[in-house]
Amino acid sequence: MLLLLLTKQIWVVDISNFTTQNNSNMNFDQKDILEALSFVIEPDLKKDIVDLNLVSNVKSEGNKISFDLQINNPAMHNKKRITEACELHLNRVLKTEIELNISITPIPKAPETPKSSKVLPNVKNIIAIASGKGGVGKSTTTANLAVALAQKGYKVGLVDADIYGPSMPLMFNVEDEKPMPIEVNGRNMIKPVESYGVKLLSIGFFANTDQAVVWRGPMATKALTQLFTEANWGELDYMLIDLPPGTGDIHLSLVQTVPVTGAVIVSTPQKMALIDARKAVGMFKLEQINVPVLGMIENMAYFTPAELPNNKYYIFGENGLKDLAAEQNLPLLGEIPLVQSVREAGDAGRPAVLQENTPQAKAFMEFADNVIAQINLRNEKLDPTKKVEITNMNGCSTK
Image (cartoon, rainbow, N blue to C red):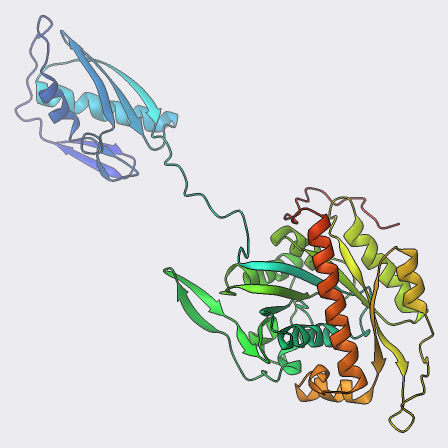
């Protein structure tokens, strides 16, 4: 018995009746040649090379045989082993020593099924809600904007992209709910939680409320991407994305993952907040990112006591964001008053915009109207946004 090792395939060849003849003056029948080659197994595909139709252009002249052969991995060692296997079986079946010439090429790769170039193809507008610093009420503003849009009859989704401090499950009173798996076209996907007419996904659904999310950038980025690509959002008029405060990995990952229609910047009128709000605007205006800024919304703009409804007290300063918006040539989308019931509504999981006929509800509804107007204006004047391709952010700054 002769053992020939071909990659992981062990050949066992019975040569007890192996005799050689001088057939230099005869041509071999192609059927006999293919019969011999049918004992040769393609090592990766685990089937014989004849059955796989990998042998072509077979020629013989005397004891000289040539043919073309395709294999999955035409590395030098694979070529050598499969050539030895072919020669061995041809000699055995044809009962003569042959001179073999094989042209070995790789098996052509099957064309990949084209993937949809669009992420969230059924979402008409994707709006990033950002702030330069924390504590300015960005998440509260986002939640109320989402519900206001839903109240106006639009189909709305909300992604809580504040990976390290997710708050939307609390604000929508769905802390105890979990997104359910759903099969869509043979693919397992996540079904968003729905509350107040808003479809919602948050990292908060997948982590314990008392557990800190301590992830490095790549892991946080992957988690954010899955909220977009592995969820069944369906058709939406608006998707709002509540970003973490500041500028960083999550913001870059967002614009690289989905085509952001525009950004809204949230700030208080306080000078400290305005410094960082300017940086947030600058980030979206960077040449490498170039996401249109729809405008700015001033939260905690003034305080009006319930017993003095006509009085306004500018606790954090007056016209701070209005002046910054004018400086940046951006519209001021609204002024949200500092009202205790806004905080209470968030804690209770019922956004303040649902408090009908109150100053805060009217302010949020007016804010929503202005966002809609700016989106429409942006879509009329500018081409649809594409995902951002960022190859190197070294040295980028907002100056």
